[in-house]
Length: 462
Image (cartoon, rainbow, N blue to C red):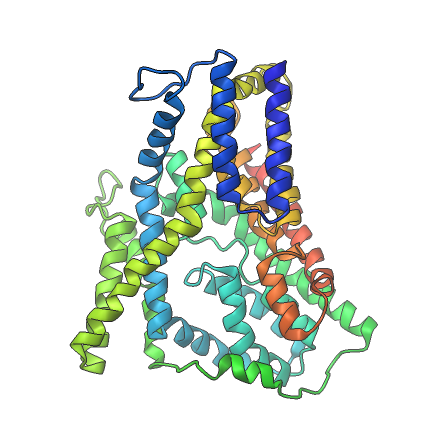
């Protein structure tokens, strides 16, 4: 009983501090150590691969175990993808892709037809620009003026851009890599077999909802076909953007192209398995070397090309700081919860309950949604519990995907409906409006998306 009470206090405290914008990974890390020592004090052993010989030092051995595990192939993959994205951003390949996608958009004259088109194209860009805030900055500088010129109202354009980084089914997404690891499959398998089945219909429904909701609010506010006056601040945002040759747009999606080629083209027709065993790290390295070689030929500056290669390693460091460190801290916190026995108690209490699957789905998704709304990101909660979800569901004979997938999708979607999320604050600051004004525009499409994800997840995997 005391274990349950202590665990609930820690969960509430961690959630509160994350909602108050304390650094999630530091809070999780400190809370994990505190919980591990409480476990030791209460007589619960800390299981480690290399016991220290002292129960009071075993929490450090457990932390080392978590570091070793998370710094393996998954941590390396995430860091390399961040390094690749940093280099793509530096050489302007991401800008080239935005420019290529913007060209057909500028030719469309029907303002509200543009809403779902821009929403879906923006979500496609998430495959190459994983940062929601970074994508928003780029689109506000490059695409926003084009949308305004076409006659789209400022709030409609801002709302669409604020929801461009949501639940794109990409095998390069760090959260998809993590879930796939815990399901013991590749990220490509996870996306094609499970994620896309839910996320693609949800994105299409969100796109249609966006159209209806933005048109309704524009009509009510009398802001349909508002004349566009160029904003000097937007000019400043875009003045440093130098677009390279437009064919550079192919570089950001090279990993996806190569991933599909190696996994779908080079197949053993008898076994159905790939003939070439190329993982994401190897594919990312190949995708890096090709544009480096092209840059060397195009600019004829060997010294500068070598110097630019450093951005790959700087990006890897950023990947560790932003994502891998959070996964490590969350993993240690979950290990602490397991050590005190709360996970066992939870599974035992729900073992004989009818319909335990939907209960778990709503519990974990609701937790990600609530903390995500309050803090601006539900990803910290998602990474905290993704490790134990397979353990809980297997013990209770519940489909792991039913619990993990809707929680993941909710954690990503809720960001665009939180007034404290970086992406909302960026768009609101450019438009010089209150963040709640943007949230009013994004909330309906976002919550329709969450409802769709939960409904489809239960239908397919419940």
